[in-house]
Length: 218
Image 1 (cartoon, helix red, strand yellow):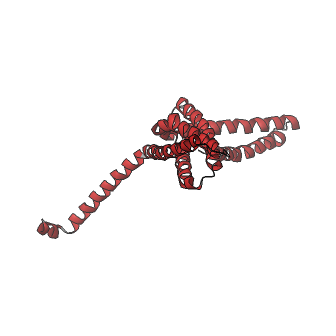
Image 2 (cartoon, one colour; image 1 turned 120 degrees about the vertical axis):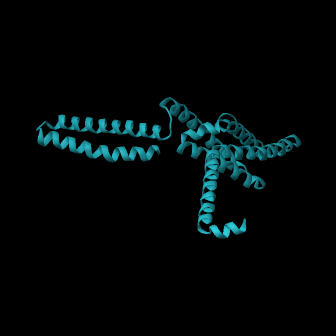
Image 3 (cartoon, one colour; image 1 turned 60 degrees about the horizontal axis):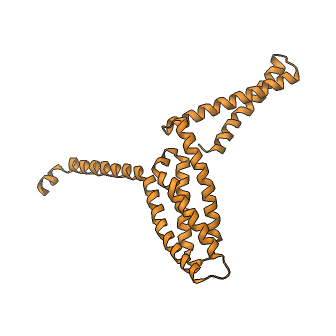
């Protein structure tokens, strides 16, 4: 679940519990004002942590992950966020109009993989090459390209390096697209299976509807 949404839900429940606990302590049990405040805060904190634990366990169960696995994935997704931020900065600092589409594609695919892995953490395992190799490569390439492209005077060596980097970025874009395909590979297989089932059902329906016509056609 989205961390912000999760916090909002927990707060939405914890705040009324805090107020209710304080009111009950003060008016029903006739506690002094300060103890009532303390009980109210304690009640809200306890509810907050209970909800946090329950929602976390439900999330892990839904995605078939252990807490250790989720911590491992979350750590690498957090590191990836920083790398994608660097990628975004370097891509948009490049003034070369001929590479605009290429840069947009790189960022689109990269963010799509990250977004899917955050929403469904188990997809991370289908994108390990992306997180442990390809993302680092694309960040390094774009940062170096941005640095060289920003030089006011370019030598022949710099121009040649820029050409080679553009070619490599073209190849890396295709690699990133393959990473994305691996992330959605299970969905593609499932969709193909559903299509086969649907076709079989349609054929069965037609055969049962027009048995005589099908017999003569054979």
